[in-house]
Image (cartoon, rainbow, N blue to C red; front, side, top):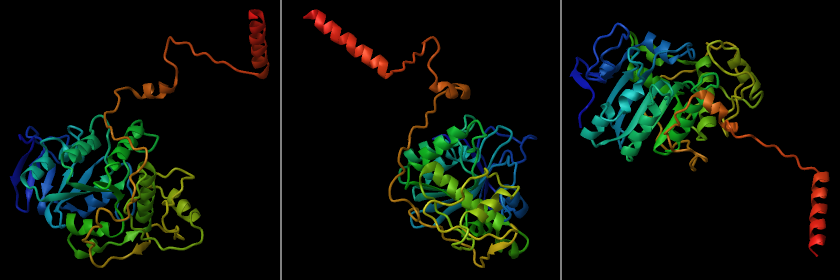
Length: 367
C-alpha cells in the first residue's frame, strides 16, 4: 500500500497532508494540513458556529466543508478522533480525502484491524457530484470493509434541493448509500450530539460555551433535516426532538416559524412532520429562545440499530456508476430519439366497428 498522505507529529496530536504533493497555498487557508487528529482537531467556537450553525440555526451561503470523525472499536472504545477540512485550492471535500483508496481511513484500518465503527459529524451531508464523488468513495470503502459500520451525522443537507443542477444525482447517491443499512446510517445532528461535539471538538476559553443551549431555530432545522433525509432514503434516521410537545396545532406553527426564519431554506407548503414521529410542537415565535439545557455532555452515541426501520428501504439502486451525460440530456430522456418519427393513433368506436365489418366481408368472400 502506497499512501497518498504524509502525517507529522504535532504538540497535541498529528497534522496530515492528505496528498503528499500539497503545499502551502494562498488560495486555501488550511493547506496543506487538511486532516488533524487528537486535540489538534479542535476548532474555535466562532468557526464551529459559522460552519455548523449552532446554536442559532444554519448560516447561508455555506461554502466551507468540515467533518469531525471518531474511529472506535466494536466495544465503543475510542481509537482516534480528528477532523478533515475541504480544500478550496483543489476543490476537494473532506469525505473524498478520508475515504479514497490508499487514503487516510484506508491506511488506518489497514494498520489497526480493531477499528469497527466510523462516526462522521459533518456540516454538510455527503454529495456525489462529478468533481468530488464523495459517496462513491464511501460506498466502495464500505464494500471493501464489510465489517466496519459508518454513522453519518450532518447539520444541513448539501445540494439536494431541486434548484441545484446536481440535486438528482445527490439524492440518488444518498439512497444508494442508505441501502447499505444497517452498515450505514444517515441522521441529522440533534439533541445531545451537539453537546458531544462541543465537548470533543471545540476549543473555548470558558466552560460555559460547552453547555450552550439548543435554540429553537437550530431545533427546527434539525427536525426538518430528519424529515428530508427520511423522504430521500426511505430510512428513518436517529433523531432527538428537543422541542416541547403538544397535541394542538401539530404542523401549522412549526411550518410558519421555520418559513419565516431567514436562515433556513424551506420551501413554502413543505410539511415538517417526521413520518411516524411524535406530534409537532406549539412553537414560540422567538427562534433564539433556548428549548433545552444539557448540564452534562452527551458522550455515548446510540447504537447502530437504534430507531431504525427493521426492513431495508425499498426500490434502492445500489449502483453508483452514473451515466456520463449532460443535464439537458437527462431532461430529454423521455422524448423519442431524433430521426425516429413518433406515431400517435387514436382508437374510437367507429374505427373499431368499421374494422370488424371489413373482417366479416373478407371471411364471406373466402367462402
